[in-house]
View 1: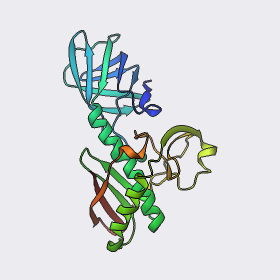
View 2: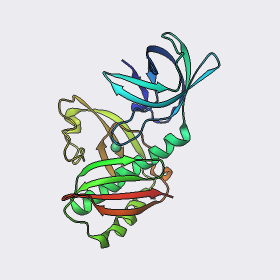
View 3: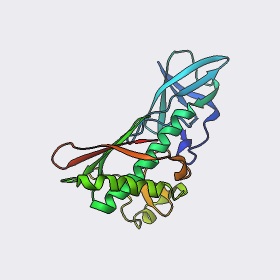
View 4: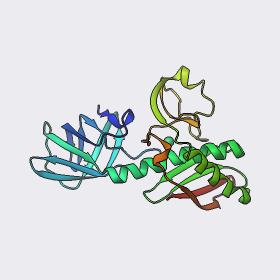
Length: 235
Ligand SMILES: [Zn+2]
């Protein structure tokens, strides 16, 4: 098992770790802050250093309770004590976009009742797909304004693990339409933009919405019968 430390701490990005397993160009650490691609949030980049040798982390994936980090060369061995560092500039950009996605999905939910069918975060933009028959194009600018108003409230963002029983009491906690996200789960990680929105989510987020900046919707388009896509950038 890998201790997945980003789950409760989205800000630490330098730490010491021990190599637990090596599979060709993939390395398993005892504990990690590298985020493995999941839920539309890409893997972190970064470095693992051992004995003055630098290994670039190209991607990470989660499987069987472990995180497998793909590195750019072989050479690490089980038992090596390594220094790890997440590319923080890139990670913080991804965090800003992820928290912005939660705010925008809350606003579209409030305004239209539409659930989310998917999202993808990039370093220069993000998109969310909504289960909706039609966009009222005149209202898109309004969603952008509402989102920016919410961001400017400087809401604190908290993430914590709640019992399934407590999680079930929170309305609209699961925003994904097609995914039985909480099926069989005894505990749920919740991302709470306090006073604005709470969602079940495993991703990394900023501590306060003031870190997000200004959101600008760049696209609103039809992607199939009941699929409407909004793309935005942060300025
Ligand atoms: Zn999320």
